[in-house]
Image 1 (cartoon, rainbow, N blue to C red):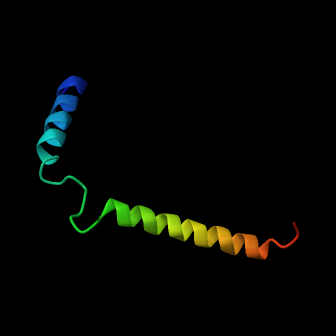
Image 2 (image 1 turned 180 degrees about the vertical axis):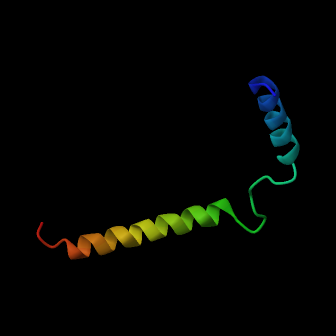
Length: 55
């Protein structure tokens, strides 16, 4: 088996399997995840600034 034929088989396998499993779950809303991540980071920033009283 050569490198070229192995690579071609992997490309074929990846293109066939991509339609069934897109990687996104139907219950995951990108807007909600983004807002949640932003709020979590803002909370961590606020906590960090509360503990850093030397400035």
